[in-house]
Image (cartoon, rainbow, N blue to C red; front, side):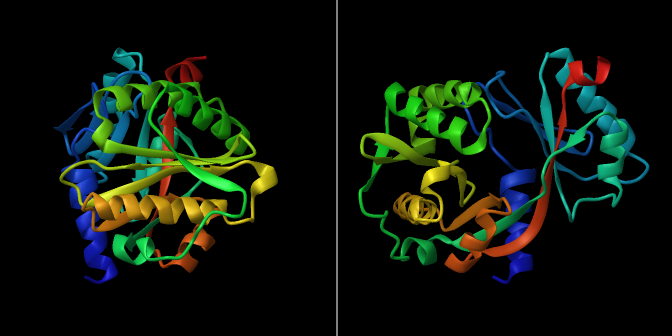
Length: 264
């Protein structure tokens, strides 16, 4: 497949036909929109839309009503190839806040799984299977990204308890301290394994921890029979991923809606 064909497959499998990705979640297709609704700790938002200039504003209002009635913050995940061309402007006008743009990068799992990327000396990759491991992941998340990892902690604990086969998580440990962590989401039927949450604490960056976490998760995805890997890559991770063999297929921007932020 060429890149355009892979992107079309991604849009179909991971967006238009996406199954729920976590416990208590449901995917609905309504009014030219595919959205996921779940508990507060889950990802809530719009996965795909097939809109026009004539239908976009009404669809945006409908999603705001839907999630606000449930008391949920939500994200409209907008890709650069989505239409209409001014959908981002329309979302901002409706009260959404745009987050940092990321690159949608995809690679053949077998190619990345074959990369020789052992962790640096003194670092061990430890599987996360219980609450203690999730706690270490949340600690890395707080230090690596400077954000509160409590919501992530709740989500991962529930996923490990109720849908353990859809998640594989790992912590990089040095001298008994977590220095990096990451997870791979393995949603059945999609063919794409999603690499998420790859983070390294500041003092360990640039030493090969992130690269080792990517290769480790690729090998897990290969063992589980997922032929492709997908990452929403930040500006920091994109160069590493491209050097490993990932191809940029599009860009994606999160548009977040928080009812209290728009109503004051």
